[in-house]
Length: 566
Ligand SMILES: [Zn+2]
Image 1: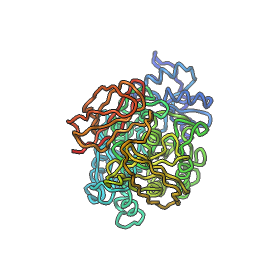
Image 2: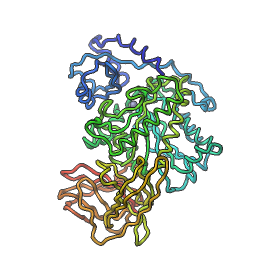
Image 3: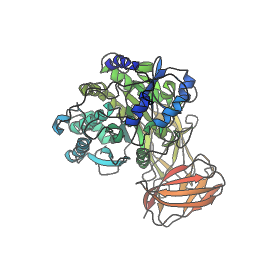
């Protein structure tokens, strides 16, 4: 996985001098909608400033590689930075005549149709522990597929939900096959391997091998040879998520079709741990991407460093010297590498109170087929270990002390948590799960309409689970202060026909929209909100899960999942 980095510099002697009025970069843009550029490495400040305008892909010792679409290219030209076109080396064309049986050694790329069949086959071959689900459709109508792997797979169980997703950059393909191989490994070894059985029995595992199929199959459904980074709308999906600093649309684009589908999927599941896979470098990257570590760290920075270190160290134990050694021997804080806004990792970790890392698997963008098996051997122990992390920490149920019903509550560690590092219990089950390093902690559990509970001296041991159920006593008057940074819809779940209350931090006009899990807006109303509690008419036509988005005239839009019971 190293050999291409040297060869790649041979490609640099192609200059972007205009030819017949059109530069080579423009020619590539016209043909492929995107082009990679390389330019001398400027100061860190300048890299981070450029990163807001173009898609910085890799920061190397003395150069920077970036991807641009047409609009970004024009913006980049105004910077007057000398550059050259950069071609990531592409492996020789893949053999297009593989049978499904051949593909099951996970050493070749399937066609898009074969990918679909492989995913279906996982579920039909292992119906007891695997089912297939669709996250949504892409801009061009391909499917964003995921499998759920768990014991009692058809039931919603009280288990930590875990998520792996790969290849949101369509040309970073190694992780795509790695995920298929992992699914196969979990399903095939469930009966015989203790670790696999423990993972499948303890977790609700979701795996989405291909998050940008339009990009991966940009050259046609038969091959990944024409794969490109962006989606079919020329959007970099890993710059397109809401951002803690900039809010919605940090890249200036509308949300891509794939981004909306992924946000809705993530909202509808309470994933407590996740990772997404990329290529172009070999390093484990942890939050924040938005800030350097000297500007801001996550409250659980030490935990993030620990799980990232474990991933890389385990890789090193199973790979030849030199693999995954970028930055601090294979680990970097996101912003310390280079700052980006709109990344999935920061969206999940900030907005959804999850914990997500980004794993860069290979220097090559398209891992050659004859290296796919090595990629698996180097990484699969780490993949299993990382999943296991989701089992540890503190977990339990939050329930109403009078009715015994589940309560959606905020579980916070005062003096430790900051920004958005606390977690929430699930509104339907009351289940919560907090990942944290070994130590003794004081927990505070609060919910609108309930007396806040403080629990001191909760002991957490590494690689052990601390079980802690919490009952909350209802009070007639809520003691949670109105807050601008948090919205509170209650009761949640709510019964159709009953009244809903919104707690809001300021007086302003707002639109409230109700969107179904399919992304269709069901109802939108305009209301005048006052500070404190506001009765909200609940549309009679809606039931089940919906997403309520409140857009105040002076406040950033906020969305909360609401469950409407019949
Ligand atoms: Zn990437």
